[in-house]
Image 1: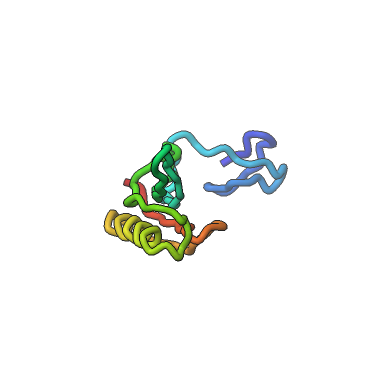
Image 2: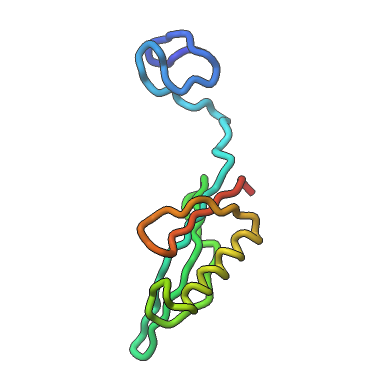
Length: 121
Protein backbone atom coordinates (compact mmCIF):
# COMPACT_ATOMS: atom_id res chain seq x y z
CA UNK A 1 0.00 0.00 0.00
CA UNK A 2 1.29 3.47 -0.91
CA UNK A 3 0.66 6.85 0.72
CA UNK A 4 -1.36 8.99 -1.71
CA UNK A 5 0.58 12.10 -0.65
CA UNK A 6 4.27 11.11 -0.52
CA UNK A 7 4.13 7.62 -2.12
CA UNK A 8 5.86 5.98 0.87
CA UNK A 9 5.38 2.21 1.18
CA UNK A 10 3.01 1.44 4.08
CA UNK A 11 1.73 -1.76 5.66
CA UNK A 12 -1.85 -2.78 4.79
CA UNK A 13 -4.38 -1.21 7.17
CA UNK A 14 -2.19 1.78 8.07
CA UNK A 15 -4.13 4.83 9.22
CA UNK A 16 -1.21 7.31 9.26
CA UNK A 17 1.79 7.62 6.99
CA UNK A 18 5.05 7.08 8.86
CA UNK A 19 6.86 9.35 6.37
CA UNK A 20 4.67 12.46 5.97
CA UNK A 21 2.29 11.97 8.92
CA UNK A 22 -0.88 12.39 6.88
CA UNK A 23 -4.00 10.34 7.49
CA UNK A 24 -4.57 7.52 5.01
CA UNK A 25 -7.96 7.58 3.29
CA UNK A 26 -10.13 4.52 3.84
CA UNK A 27 -10.40 2.29 0.83
CA UNK A 28 -13.68 2.19 -1.05
CA UNK A 29 -15.82 -0.61 0.28
CA UNK A 30 -14.23 -0.52 3.73
CA UNK A 31 -16.60 -1.76 6.36
CA UNK A 32 -18.39 0.60 8.72
CA UNK A 33 -17.83 0.34 12.48
CA UNK A 34 -19.39 -2.85 13.80
CA UNK A 35 -20.86 -1.21 16.89
CA UNK A 36 -23.72 1.17 17.58
CA UNK A 37 -24.14 3.21 20.74
CA UNK A 38 -27.27 4.36 22.50
CA UNK A 39 -27.76 7.02 25.16
CA UNK A 40 -30.73 7.77 27.41
CA UNK A 41 -31.89 11.38 27.36
CA UNK A 42 -34.63 13.31 29.16
CA UNK A 43 -37.42 15.50 27.82
CA UNK A 44 -40.41 17.20 29.35
CA UNK A 45 -43.78 17.92 27.80
CA UNK A 46 -45.75 20.76 29.33
CA UNK A 47 -49.11 22.25 28.53
CA UNK A 48 -51.25 24.86 30.21
CA UNK A 49 -52.68 22.32 32.65
CA UNK A 50 -50.10 19.54 32.91
CA UNK A 51 -46.40 18.90 33.07
CA UNK A 52 -44.78 15.53 32.61
CA UNK A 53 -41.39 14.14 31.75
CA UNK A 54 -40.11 11.09 29.94
CA UNK A 55 -36.85 9.46 28.92
CA UNK A 56 -35.97 8.41 25.41
CA UNK A 57 -33.20 6.30 23.92
CA UNK A 58 -31.21 7.79 21.06
CA UNK A 59 -29.06 5.41 19.01
CA UNK A 60 -26.03 6.50 16.99
CA UNK A 61 -24.65 4.57 14.03
CA UNK A 62 -23.61 4.96 10.40
CA UNK A 63 -27.03 6.41 9.49
CA UNK A 64 -26.79 9.07 12.22
CA UNK A 65 -28.92 9.56 15.33
CA UNK A 66 -32.30 7.88 15.68
CA UNK A 67 -34.79 7.76 18.57
CA UNK A 68 -35.54 4.08 19.22
CA UNK A 69 -37.59 3.91 22.45
CA UNK A 70 -39.52 5.94 25.03
CA UNK A 71 -40.15 5.48 28.75
CA UNK A 72 -43.52 5.84 30.45
CA UNK A 73 -44.33 9.47 31.32
CA UNK A 74 -44.12 10.77 34.89
CA UNK A 75 -44.96 13.92 36.86
CA UNK A 76 -42.38 16.33 38.32
CA UNK A 77 -40.07 16.66 40.14
CA UNK A 78 -37.52 15.42 37.59
CA UNK A 79 -35.04 14.04 40.11
CA UNK A 80 -33.77 10.64 41.14
CA UNK A 81 -35.82 10.81 44.35
CA UNK A 82 -39.02 10.75 42.27
CA UNK A 83 -39.99 7.07 42.42
CA UNK A 84 -42.01 7.28 39.17
CA UNK A 85 -39.10 8.93 37.31
CA UNK A 86 -36.64 6.31 38.54
CA UNK A 87 -39.08 3.50 37.62
CA UNK A 88 -39.49 4.96 34.11
CA UNK A 89 -35.71 5.05 33.68
CA UNK A 90 -35.38 1.44 34.83
CA UNK A 91 -38.21 0.33 32.52
CA UNK A 92 -36.48 1.90 29.52
CA UNK A 93 -33.14 0.35 30.51
CA UNK A 94 -34.72 -3.11 30.82
CA UNK A 95 -36.39 -2.69 27.42
CA UNK A 96 -33.06 -1.83 25.78
CA UNK A 97 -31.33 -4.84 27.35
CA UNK A 98 -34.16 -7.11 26.15
CA UNK A 99 -33.66 -5.71 22.64
CA UNK A 100 -29.99 -6.73 22.70
CA UNK A 101 -28.27 -3.60 23.97
CA UNK A 102 -25.46 -4.01 26.50
CA UNK A 103 -25.13 -1.39 29.22
CA UNK A 104 -21.74 0.26 29.56
CA UNK A 105 -20.49 2.73 32.16
CA UNK A 106 -22.69 5.73 32.83
CA UNK A 107 -21.51 8.93 31.24
CA UNK A 108 -22.71 12.49 31.41
CA UNK A 109 -23.60 15.03 34.00
CA UNK A 110 -27.10 13.81 34.91
CA UNK A 111 -28.35 11.14 37.31
CA UNK A 112 -30.17 9.40 34.46
CA UNK A 113 -27.12 9.27 32.14
CA UNK A 114 -26.80 5.72 30.82
CA UNK A 115 -25.07 4.43 27.73
CA UNK A 116 -25.52 1.16 25.84
CA UNK A 117 -23.86 -0.54 22.85
CA UNK A 118 -24.42 -3.41 20.45
CA UNK A 119 -23.25 -4.70 17.09
CA UNK A 120 -24.78 -3.64 13.78
CA UNK A 121 -28.20 -5.00 12.88
